[in-house]
Length: 322
Ligand code: PLV
Image (cartoon, rainbow, N blue to C red; front, top):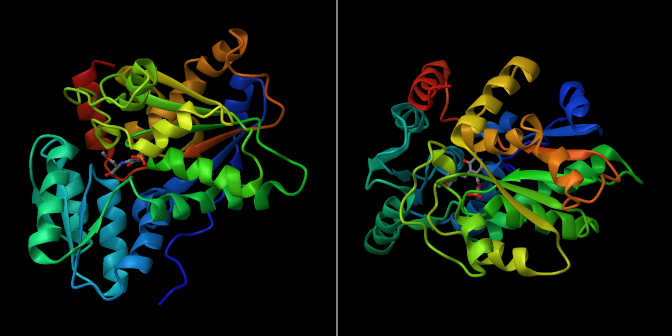
């Protein structure tokens, strides 16, 4: 079996983003992973640790965790069942089936699908693959930061890292990676969309809270409750985590600008992070003194996502009237 399933992704300098931010911007191109997102790092690692003797894996997902689990399971020769909520677009179901997974549509949002995945794991004896809340996932995701350190070379350290937050697994992985690299003091800008803002709501409330509903179209950010570890990190003084939100319109606009300027199509889940550059949020945070002036390049985690194509993009544009 392969040592791991993920690839060492390119680290690209973006001239147009650098111009906007007023500092060098590097893009960590996780969209180019097998299965289309960073999820393969954590899920590949978790499955290698937990699923080698498994009679099957079951994963609840907005889309991309499921894509990664289906891919890894196929490579490992293990059957995969992926539970998605009805809010996931049809193209996700098709892509999962193309990966030879059994797909079940359960509930309206990810939290409903997750309850079914946990039930199936219990009753069918399947290995449960969580999409964001597990230390093995964070350990797997952390490799993206160690790769960045190797790409940048000695003496270069990011001034800040920009990430999207769904359930907080990517954030925990990035923090793990920063710790592993000796970069714990690098500020992180953690982006969500309005209506999928479980970290932002928790930070504002000073405790983990559960959103009533997911009203954002960025369905892959649609966990109602952020994982406890991500919230805990946000409260610790050794890290600077700046939690910010953008509208769905801003996230979608960012997807389009990124497609135009970088020639890469990503999901709105990723657009949420990109919007921090395109809306001028990064500059604003600096002006307001909330983000220290960048002492190195801005590192943007291009988390990617497979739940998008030109038809879906048009559907979203119509829905959001952009
Ligand atoms: N998506 C999860 C959770 O959905 C999933 O099941 O695929 N960017 C993309 C493209 C993603 O797919 C996700 C998570 C994130 C960012 C956020 O990562 P997280 O959940 O680890 O914070 C409900």
